[in-house]
Image (cartoon, rainbow, N blue to C red; front, side, top):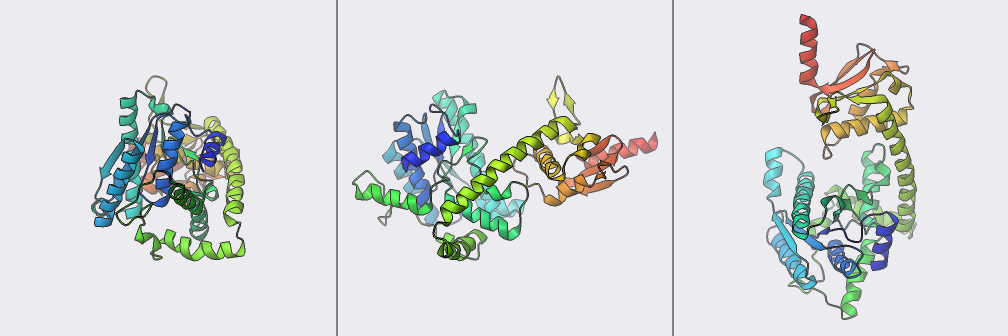
Length: 369
């Protein structure tokens, strides 16, 4: 298992051998295995200093506190510094009127980035090289694939997960959940140091993972097992297919980025003060001559940069922007309102995407002039 993690790190250039690494550990089987492997990677000189982060979402009462206690015990046994963050996710979701899972994910990564900065300051390591390791597995990737197949997805969706997304890396994406559990059982059977919870278990079980009224759990228990009955090699086959898709996605993303650089400008682009992406962008007339698949990816990239990395860019917004072109030319007079109250307008200079307040102020000024 250590060799598999090292191979993933090397193949996908996930981490330098002296980089600071923060392990996100919930206490479940996957992240518990990640903790042991993180310590092994540190001892092997494959990574630099290692720390752990545990986020208590306060969603499962005493069970959540038990998870926290288990991770504390694990960190102590492995001699790994531990950050603990406790957040009332239910209260935050109620306050923001968002989905609990989405809030939990956002808060986890906010906590992870804060912990990583603190770790790098303490260790004297460059933050630009530091990495956040998560315990996502091939099973998570397969579940994402089927979830997106059921509800639909946009460009890049069927690669399911990236091995690296900014500082976040997933060195266990080629391993299955069963393999990681076998790794933990194997450590115990071989007499290697292990940590157990109060019930003697090698990891913590989250009972909500079996609740099939939740979409991921439904896919995990109702969709994937029948597919494995049809083809027992499903994990290897589907991961290989997703990696092929990922290679093509990477190529198309590079082409889309070239299109962005050649045929779009940021409204507030200044050589002295840089770019304020929140003010919007303009697609130049030449953009209309590109192939529609590249246009979609380019617009998605621009909207993501404008709205921020955590925003969900809607397919309807991308299509509304592209409707600003007709027969390869700007569709003068076209106006649309898309997510986050953004205005899309077209004239002979191209297609402009900007906050609606800016659009209205400009229209008012033009009317008075």
